[in-house]
Length: 532
Picture 1 (spheres, rainbow, N blue to C red):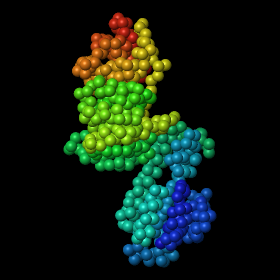
Picture 2 (cartoon, rainbow, N blue to C red):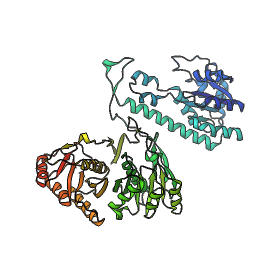
Picture 3 (cartoon, rainbow, N blue to C red):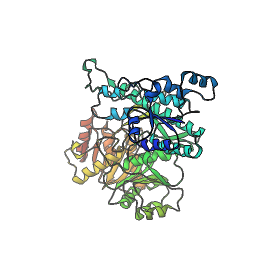
């Protein structure tokens, strides 16, 4: 057997090559890989010795040769193919080990020049990978270090690769090429080309949304069905899931997650991890029906559950702190579909052992950083429409006290300002039109998804009354402005004494005058949070 090794990322390649050599497999290699293997004392033949042609053009041309591609592409079962190889002195290559120039990592660097990006577009590597992957029945193609162990295991036990593994490797290879070409397309189609600025140091300006979008996702699992039982569905994740995102979670127990479980769990998790203090979020049909902060998970849950115990039945619950025995005992008294937290104590896990249908998800919180990805957030969101796709940057806006503009005579108290920030954060995750009443770090009434903001406010009041919660002296957040004073009047009639809204209506002054007339405080946030 003969193996050709040519890797940009050299992780594990020496150990892999040593194992191949130990199995009697002849090693071919190129450039830096060949030097590395030779330095480790491995007998390796340079590809240039096979092609009888030196590497040239700064390594751009080294494997683009019939002596290489003939050895990869020849079908062993076809006599005419084997005769052609013999005629031209070409030997078969049975195993190809290639990973590509780091294009994705290169363009991700701040200040990446166009020249550097172009230079990191691999040509020979993808060509060899395609050749080997196409001829999967005869050639094994390895494109990632995490495949080494499986390849070695079969070579050691059977002396060859199984059809199944070769096919799996071929699929993985074509997937990798698709990802690689997609990344190149994404980058180049986003470049705002300026001829007059061309130089080796030219760092092009890039459009937020390029001329072509090439989304690549990896299947996590098939689902029993979709949103409804007559729909089929599957769950896919990003190639590189953001730390602290739902896709990084581990299910500890319970039934398989359903389509709706996953959608609701994401809504709950995104909301709860937006709080810096201990918090609990209860979600039903993608809307928070109870949100609260507390000194620990147990207190946060107790407060969140009070908001709407009826809707909380069969809901999705998320914590941003460890679920301990006290919190687990409280939650276990209710019917819950999915329970998520960064960690569960051993006592908490024991409590749920008997509740085998309850899905427990462990998701580490993101460490944080300067980018959306580092903070566990999507940078871009998508919405499928008829024969198309809507893309937008994610709504990752965060409001601070300094952003609030008091527009009324009455000034909010320090406690009201804190509750306003809390209410505003919750409203961001409630389907529009959204009205959220809060007090002392807990939701008191949530109105979501109505065509009229007035109806959302009335629903919030109805839910508060059903939960035996008073809306007197609450603060309220509206995800969009009040176009008329009636929106303000209905929340004040319900008991609100302080209101947060974006502002920006032609009738802002009319609404401000109404707030002054009613003797309530109102702040403008300057930002809208539609969520459809």
